[in-house]
Image (cartoon, rainbow, N blue to C red; front, side, top):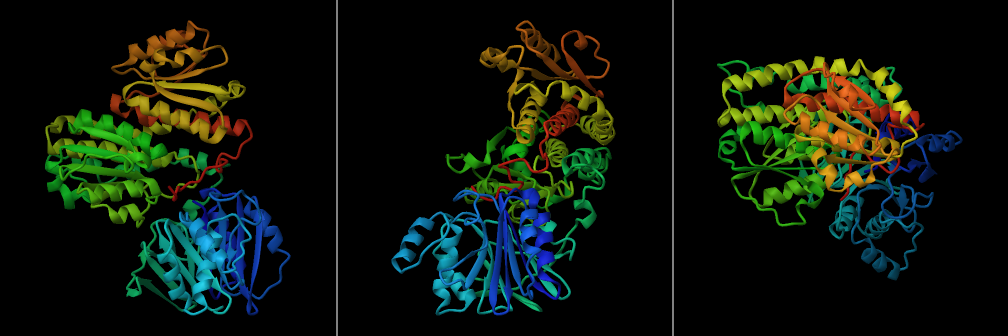
Length: 611
């Protein structure tokens, strides 16, 4: 969940490491540190807090720079303190490493090492690994020592390693925690994701589970179970410009405003297949498994967080228009129950990063049970994209803000296309698919219409800054959007909010309603409009304040609510694309109004790579 950067080559190491750490700040962290080979030794510096605190310390150093490793830590074992910050060293200060992941059996390993005289300085599981590698490196090469140590480890890791006795090399290893190598002209960069690499090179090598890379300034080799592995580089599709704010005060706002393009990119070259009578409507990424898809009798969607709510919305798409029984499961719980899967079941994993640990493990469980595995991911070359039988990229571009926005709407777009694709394989008529596809092409412009109301939404949010408890309510397609809206305001404003199906309010949550507990209703003019309006009446009759998202032209609703924000009219199934943008903007302006850094919410990480 934290970030790793390693560098070896002709450039000055410290600027590369620091710039890389700053690019990885969005992943979430509480401390930072680096270690650099210098004059036959290792210089290490750490700081609690932001990378800028580490930069202040580094500015006082005047060292001859060799290969180096750096790390931003998101605490799992031990508090955010200087002694727990990475990199960590072994007993004799020979081996230094930065570690992402969790060593589940570190207590047992620690006891073994303590019996041999090892003394530990931190509370972390990671330091145990540094001691273990150093123990084996007394008699083995560093690569062999890594291999032997990692064979004793239970858990996950992404590692960048330095050896004081071999100052001209770096090592990297991966199991369950993403790690890639940027291949430059005269250098190599190890990083947790592409954002730390893109300024230097677009050529990357993705490490697989079990890989150990040995890297020199002019070459690298990858081994897996002692066998040499031939690795081909892949070209990144993102540009350095895309990971800049481009004049916006926050990445989150930039990414909210990028949603017309994100949806357009998700449907480009795909949606027209459902309009043309002579076109095969199968999505290209699913073509290799289209015969198996025809035979599936059940679809299970596994995902976490915002992607989970995209999946819930997709469930409505798929059942109503494709006629496929669909379940949506929390990926974090999926493999701890007994999922009933067979060869007529497809399991669809949704993940922005393609590295979400819970989702990846759910996917592997599905493969073990013989299900067809599919993916919707944003990052080309990510682990989930490589391990599924087939899948679709949503092409949203890099999403830096921790609170997901454009990835969500692009996931909705792909799920809508999936419903059309599977529906056309079954009983959906050409006329129906054409109608939905034509309206889907209008969605980017309609999203822009909502974005043009950002100033007005900001004014409305300011009125409600004193309120610390919220209820978000919706029905049918907008029930998952209510849950997503509640999650957004929780993530970046740290206030209590709950998302509920509007019909469930009277079965418990209504007890919380009072003048200090506002409710945000999603009430476009659709098949459940009158039911949602009844819920508003119930809240108002108990003195609660009501805010609503409504369809433009709905004049009745102004008499029922305290605040209304209008969205353009569209097909019922596509209203989530518009209502969610209102809730994203409201949450953004609310969080900023309270003075928080909405790009880096406390305690959160962008890519959750530990279970």
